[in-house]
Length: 354
Image (cartoon, rainbow, N blue to C red):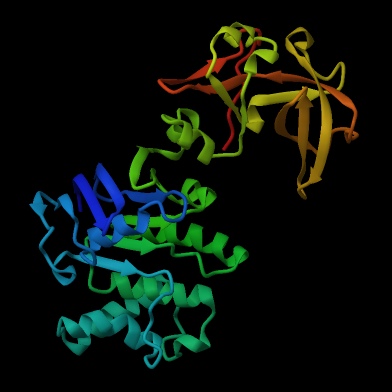
């Protein structure tokens, strides 16, 4: 299903939950609606589903305006955050529910249900009740039930929120593979950027009811269009005066311009560890935090703090010790503009890893 949204607004009394949001989604794409809690993501999802009525704007499915169509006529499957399974029904009956509403024959219902049970890895569990399943298994049942009536659009509201971390990681991979196999246009809501980056073909970042940016995870990470996107995606530190760093001295005459610097933009080391030492600034190790696979290092240059990471294979730094720091690039912004600035003193481009 191809989706067009034009000038979508939603107000609850005096509160504007969604503000002039427009976007297109190509058929078969898996889209992540990403943003902080209360930003308007779920309101957009519910308007697409027909569970909320837009205050203004148009929702178009395959060229047809669907604002006034009830949910059951939109060709949508919906997976709720709390699964919303029928507790008194078995796995089989939960998956079959929508097919029975459509009054299909018992043979067709059984054929479709058993196909989905096999597809979602639930074979052998069809006679169990929801309370007899794990959280991951209940999520799979909810997914199968949503797919049973063969919808053209699948909507998922924070589908992994109620699942523990290990199972959540496994389900992300499973969900992406399943949606690719089924070939259905899908939109899922999340406030977890790692989840969105790992699962989605494209991400739409929503904040305070507005669409900040839409694009592939790589494009958004590499080329953020707004200060909010730059600070929300990935880890970063905002530096009030970047001119204290070598290579960025020319910005000393631009009051009001700030820099956002990500850990992977920073090269650091003891004397002799950085090849381009002439472009490095001296910093003090303020704090070290062990993260299991690496050290998170807090550095201080005067009153300015930077955060970066250090491999366990390298010599352990000491709090209070000095290191050299080379910032390869920074995301610059002021009240009127934003841009990415490369350090002109560095020699080789530094790759970005996400």
